[in-house]
Image (cartoon, rainbow, N blue to C red; front, top):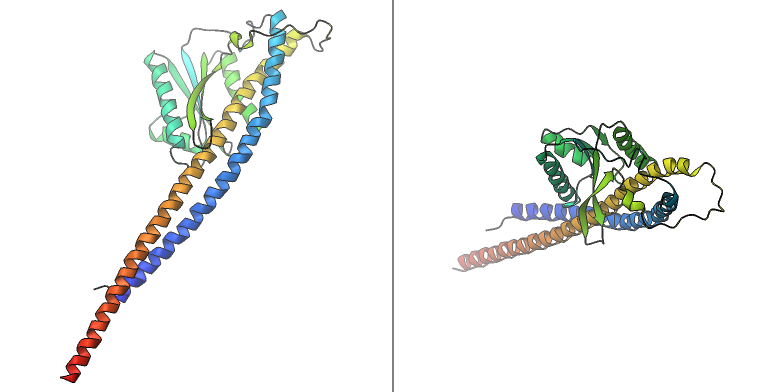
Length: 292
């Protein structure tokens, strides 16, 4: 028979589940609002990256870009892998998926006898690799949630400086590409060396234009900015993907909490009915005993 103690315990559990439901619902709404902002940042950054790319393509028609230090092709012995993860959890399979892609990239490079240096954006990625005995050479924290161009510039400059000094022969950027609120795909992009083919197909800039500084100096300035824009793009896409994954995860948690609360309510109602039935039976039995 269900007693009053069991009913009180069920009430406490229902209240706890409903409180959890309110928290997950609030987190779901926050993530939904941040997705919109993250998509806006992606759209706002696109004209800048496209503008740099178009100018480099135009200058590359009449200038030799292959001699630039960031375009130099070398025999690949040491590879850098830059992985974009989040600083916070509760984002479903977001971190797990991009970390799997990073593991595959590392295994592929090491399978070819190359040394891999690891660089990580986000606490989750750093903790994941540290637990497995592979510490990152550098970790950037507090960047993933709302990336800024200055932070992307710091990350890009670190990778470019090591490539210029021939400390790295190739750099992979592993991030999550935001397709929609329901679809985010882990991808990898070869960040360095920059491929000359990326600047093919441009139209020569009108010779009437006067360049200050000279065209070759402009290229030396713009190509690093192009790499920086690619890093920034990866950070923005990863940020939007993180918020989308968190929204879905919190929605699932909210729905589960609702189902658990409903199930506990049914159990509590059954317990109350059993208690009431038992009390009525006792009263009837006591009345009959007194009548006898």
